[in-house]
Length: 368
Image (cartoon, rainbow, N blue to C red):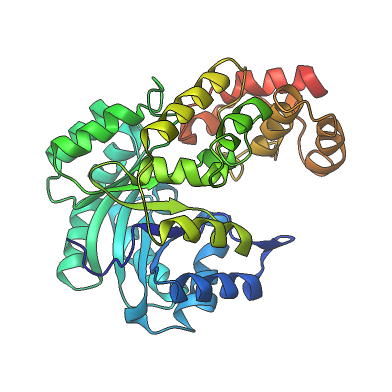
């Protein structure tokens, strides 16, 4: 199935290398070339990634420079970009134009949860995607998902035509009662849906481990912390693709070094992963993946993921530079944590279902 996919590892284009507020096209092009030359061909984007800049980078660094048949491209329909059914196809055509292609290999109903799914149904979004598939503008229709296993079961029951499901899966979230990694994975198996994994490194959290956790993996005398996280999820039955949002060539080279000739984790490595999870569970850490969905709609312009990162750095990694970054970088031209007006927009869009308002209150007490 999906013969167009060459390898089980994909380039997630949500965290591309940046020069200030702009994508570093030169470095991104170099990464794209390296990725393709190493035998990989799957790219994942969405209109909202990097505030619209990710799709432009796809055109400039990939589509304009390589034959269309040489790469597999996934894009998504995000609920914030349409209000009614009539908006969907014009938006889709706009995405094709921005990306510089005439079809998408995969098109996902983006960030599906109970509330967003109802909007998609009301606007016949799924039906329109299936129609676009019949027209040859989409090869495969799928969903990306952020909710409970019960909601996923409902979607796959109502739309059995869905061909693939993208879920968040990593060793830290696998048994998390909110993310429900294990339960969502089991629903995919129940419906025999191929799985694409997002956030295998949990937004970089599992690549930049606390000292005690890193020491556990270092004792294996093997790969990087990220390698264990990615190999962990790539080894699950039914997983056809594992995405990584790589921000520099070094990250890509590391990832491809162990995914080119992929091997599942052995029992010793799995035991080490279990011990790493125990370290994390003993800490009071904000489980933010820095997807940045919350930033765009914040009326006080609070850089929520960056403030959470400062909080984690100070309290988990004991990084005393965190206060400097909080004061001099992340809140210099943006809102401080205590400027939150409790509107709740961030919590409605958060894929991790974090109680952001309460967490910002904690961050404010720490820094403000």
